Amino acid sequence: MSAQVRLVKPSFEYSQLMYNQAMIDPLGEIYKDIKDDEPFFRLVDEFYAGVENDSILRPMYPEELTEAKRHLALFLIQRTGGRTTYSDERGHPRMRGRHMKFSIGTKERDAWLANMSKALDQVPEFEKHRDELWAFFDHFANFMMNRPD
Image (tube, rainbow, N blue to C red; front, side):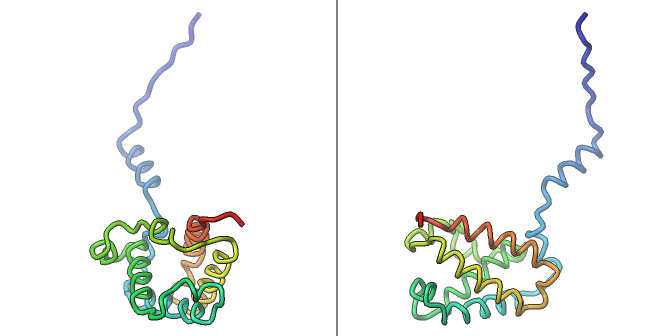
């Protein structure tokens, strides 16, 4: 005797709820809470203050950091749900491709993460979002690695 299979179509409400839960991006919600660009620019300023004194990272950046700072701040604003100026001006982020010209291994990744961690600690507006931001930065830094050690 064969078993009967009864297919039940989920209700619209259940389907919508599951769709919405699958689509939630905690990182993409941060800007809605912060509601301002200034903390992102301050985070980037703090980060680059560390980079300027970092013997591992500093050689990877141009002498003048103004554009690099602006690009990072606009990227973070966009990635956290803010305005899309970064992509409007530069196209798709293509971060791995943009960084391929730099040799990035464990040492560089760790230095980048250390400077970003210190920067995050200096911007109180991000305190309640630190876990989401740190998970993103950790994943991002690992994704940027392009050479074995």
